[in-house]
Image (cartoon, rainbow over all chains, first blue to last red; front, side):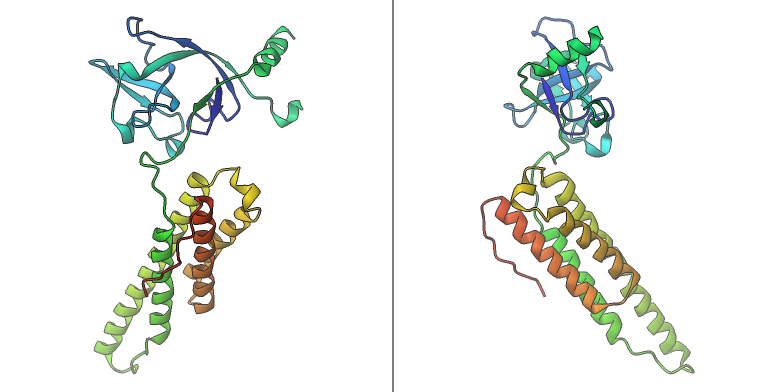
Length: 100
Length: 157
């Protein structure tokens, strides 16, 4: 998947690629602190990438790494586990200008 | 080298998008917030200019004058800062790189508008306050055009 936006900066920046491991409902939850992809709680057709901050009763608290540039559980509240799509198991950073 | 090659392969593969956006949870943006604040800046600038200082010997009148003057300046300062904040939200959160194709002067417009906010704080300058309102009007036009609308520019004062 390719990242858009800055809410996970500096960990991820636009055009970075991430490798997603899909998780079904029976799979163990990712570790706290892991990066996950989930459905936007108000617009389920959108997929958002955040860091898993806490889990309580199948409700996930997710946060962006860059609070000033992130909309996350601070505004949404917790999101249901059913919104979880998967966890990130690899990052391929976008080439910088110096690389080109 | 292997890592570099693998990265190149991964980057060459088609990928769906995952959003790390910072847009507001409601997605509601409106330059009206900046317009109201900019109007207040202009209004307070006019009021400050219209104030008449009392005679030096009239302590009570001088105290009242100083109080009113201070309040007017504080409100002008606050509203100019508010205007800047509202403009920056539109600039950094609402407008996206693709808007530059339609509005090549987008960055320059916002940059100059933000500079005018600062100038209105530093000075008591009606021309600068009017320029700020005009800059906000330009942003208003760009914003609604980007949404395919043509909302009229209507001021409160």
